[in-house]
Image 1 (cartoon, helix red, strand yellow):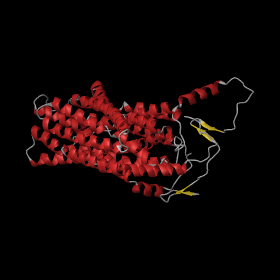
Image 2 (image 1 turned 60 degrees about the vertical axis):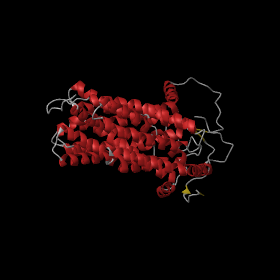
Image 3 (image 1 turned 90 degrees about the vertical axis):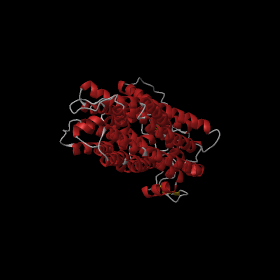
Image 4 (image 1 turned 60 degrees about the horizontal axis):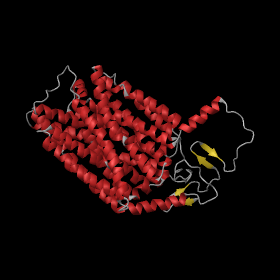
Length: 505
């Protein structure tokens, strides 16, 4: 029995003579039989299937599933005006939808993190996708008298989606290492802005095409069921830490995992910084399209939505398109900048995140200054601000991979998600709506004051973003020490036997 330097007892420290590959197990002494015979049809199909289960194909399928995850999450935001009118809800009542979703998401995340470090991950992923797809589809048939049931359905969807967000990055982490892992995680996290933007576009387009906003919730479930099936068939279940050649039989208790993560200062500060990002993106995702619509009503370029007509979705579609483009630019620029800055300093990852956060706060502040006079100017500020904000998503995930050992990464991802949602977007949509409602009650309600009250409420976001930048600077102070500690733990877990060669992935 071995003991880590942080005091955690590890189960199973002996190495095995068996070589593990993604397609199964193979002994080093195994040689081809001289009695060759033609493959049966079933064997040919299995061989073709195994060839398709490459790490690159697995990463592509997991990225597709992540796109659908975020697409479903923001489809509701794309038709928020119609939902507000249909159920006759205030700003805070509509904001409650996202808050309930995120609360259930963050409560379930640690549970799935625990399961993901101990059981078959792709089965958990598939079950989660099937669950939220079915619940989303059923929620589209809820009548306007049962708003509480619609809110509850969003909570159930959050449980299903938390399984995916907690576990899928750890599979990619076990399939790739170093710069390859950075690149694949960057592609994977492109799904956040891309899926979010497509959620607005899908919701708005389906609503306009069908003449009914309920159809916005009936497209993504079909794609979700497809993604769940692809994961079951084509995504392998690599041994935890296989890319780092540590086998996967090394496990510590859940209490030891949590104690080690709590002592990991880089992990703690980067998690708090992620919470600041989540606060801003959660509030923006729910309220910016509505804010821009109210701005156009103030400028007399649009009229308020009537009770018996479909609301204009132009702003939702434009905002969705901007989110897709800025997400792509942000993640690509972030990965390229980090790789370039690593040649200058080993603290490049948290420093790039800190600078991008502080720059983003400036342009997000300008949105509320120019929106009253120029919608185009507001879109320009949104474009630059979101690009800078999205720079840090994949980098934050890579920071976690550097400072946390493979056998507790699912737990680390889950609790980072829990923290970022608890302190971030779990409350920000509802909080912004609540502040907006309170300001509207202070004065006589008018089109101008409805616009201004929401803008004043959203001004909280840039201040939170600046705070997140400070947390990333704190991460930079401890990053090298925590990474070195993780490397020492990894060296202890790596089998010392040189006689066994691990098959290449």
